[in-house]
Amino acid sequence: MKEKEKMLAGDLYDGATNKELIKELYQAKDLCYEYNQIKPSNIKQRKEIMKKILGATKENFLIEQPFMCDYGYNIDIGENFYANHNMIILDGNKVKFGDNVFIAPNCSFYTAGHPLDYVIRNKGLEYAKPIEVGDNVWIGGNVVVLPGVTIGNNCVIGAGSIVTKDIPDNSLAVGNPCRVIKKL
Image 1 (cartoon, one colour):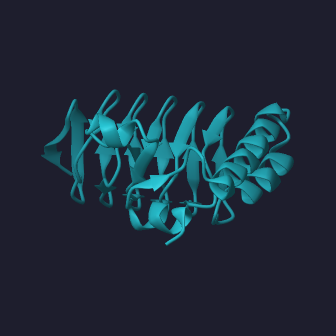
Image 2 (tube, helix red, strand yellow; image 1 turned 60 degrees about the vertical axis):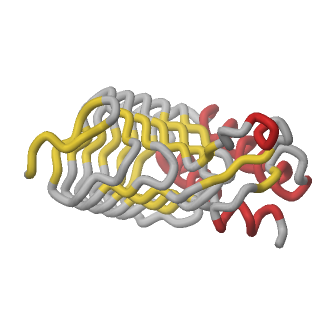
């Protein structure tokens, strides 16, 4: 199995020395750099570059600058998607956002993780688990979503939360670790 296949399967893989993954990583980072240098008022050019970065987009979306990701092709966004400044997505695995998702500034989505065993970790091995965000979701500022998490439909995630586990549909969830405090 190739390292990229292992990565997408959620298995341990070598992303640190694999030439194919390193090449794809720098292609995406170069596009992110280009995106972040575009004049903010040039929405048309920003959308064109973002469509080159991301795996799938709908027509109505806006991602404020700066934006950073690892590969880009693992990120799918739905219709009426908005992300405010400084979104970071470590997309070693799929990151899927539904329709009508609004993300406040300084939010991060990390599919990447590292083994607890230092011997394995020191070999440069890592893993990536998918993240999914449903429809009609609002994510407050400075939220971190960790590997393997699903946030259901119609949810609100409070500012500063660290989402370590799945959040069911129709939930208001906050905290570190993030937990449901109210059904919506």
